[in-house]
Length: 196
Image 1 (cartoon, rainbow, N blue to C red):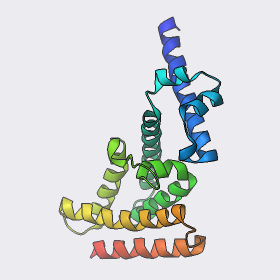
Image 2: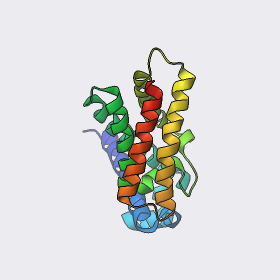
Image 3: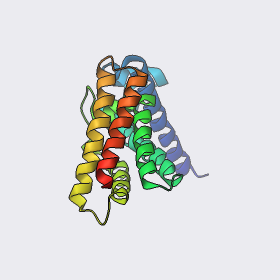
């Protein structure tokens, strides 16, 4: 391996260490606890090294957001590929979206702006999961549905699911069994409405 390749690999490894450290800090202290000095201390580098890779905290947030959307997309895509019925796909995808939010709560917060700045519209990777849902919704709807109607149905789903997630992140929530019941009722109701 040439020195140029080694330098590029080391640079990428350092970027990954920075992102991993940032996420560890956030999981322990919340987003308000994240700063460049803490990241530097965590990986035992000086703050200027962090700034060589990321110009500021927002650049780190953006990168974490990208990773989150790619992870969500890959989970949804794999799930969709393993279920043939579009209605079952749609229900399973929204349940996976729900599960992703609570397995990766801090990441979900930055991705969708729960109690912080929203990065949803600032990274192209956000479009991946959106397009996957639109495609599945269109398959459930009869005939060849208008793109605007499909988009409206996506936001019907998203409003309910994201709203319930946000209630649980921000407040005390409604309890696991109650949440699951509400979520399944809402998803099933929207699916029935778009199927007819």
